[in-house]
Length: 298
Image (cartoon, rainbow, N blue to C red; front, top):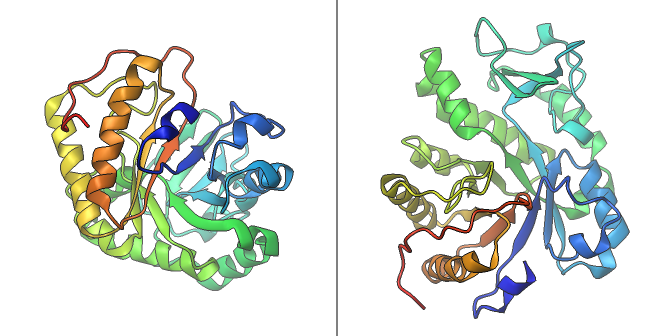
């Protein structure tokens, strides 16, 4: 990643779910300004260990989600500190779910999730538990909330005929997060969608996990219509002057020049809008095919 930082525009980097880097990997973590993981415990351990060698200001991002998450074997709710589950230790019968006859999603084979009706949750109890979990050190370094699965959230509401409630559900959850700790809330919007305008009225920013490459394997997005749609949604985010985060895979040398052109084009358009680049994972076999550039050569 350091080879990318000699462009004329400064690039700000966040490590996103970098479980391939050990907590004690000083050289690996010192390349990042921000660290994102579920909850907050792993980020805090990393910062406490490597704070002196990391860029300043350094911060952490707490990854949470719009559903209640349970262990698939015993249905025990995951905790807030390690899982990012805002409804930790809540029994299922105490959580108002958006009605579906089966688990809403399975983020991993070991975990299942149920979409929550955030307009009906027990706010005082959640606030009490979450606030008590955030130590002074966590509050000092926690600068962003990151809410995953925004398109899936909209789709879940649509399946039960409640897509019109999307804005109120987002507002309720994001208001709760700001009451726990008042920092900007970023949502993972994948590629964006018809709901993006409404979402940006509530959110402080958007993360595009599919920008130039697909997030799961680093494969280049070649479909021109898809690329144009993402570009329009990024433009909307900039127009609304919201935080813009873009996902970047491990880049092989042939891809570096393309990334520089695209990154510079984004930063030129952004002007005063905060832009950050998230490195999700080092893919050992990153593709080398370079897609047609959609911006001028610089």
